[in-house]
Image: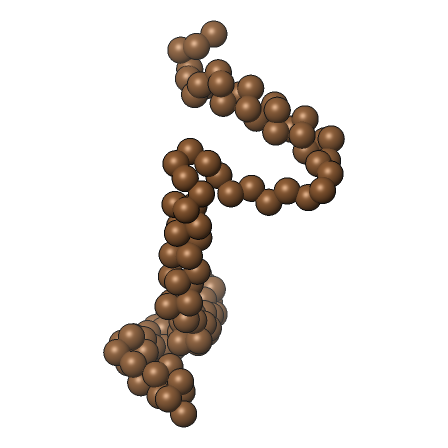
Length: 126
């Protein structure tokens, strides 16, 4: 119950609800207006009459995804990754290695390392 309350009634969620309450009817109203313009003889407005309701649906999908997103979990995962990198020491990267390295991958990594040694590519360098 607490999770549901936090999801639907937090400050962030209430702001998203407000945006949707403005966005959705605004897009539907613009679509209706474009449909009336199209019926009066403007052929291009038929496209806009379809486009505005599509924007309304897109806004509702974005609203739904943002309501069900958990920014705290994403941020905490990023924080844990940064802490692991800091624990590994400066200049050391965390690399996941399998028991045996793929020869094609090793060759590609060597190629990338040679490119990195050459420095940035500029238009002036021949």
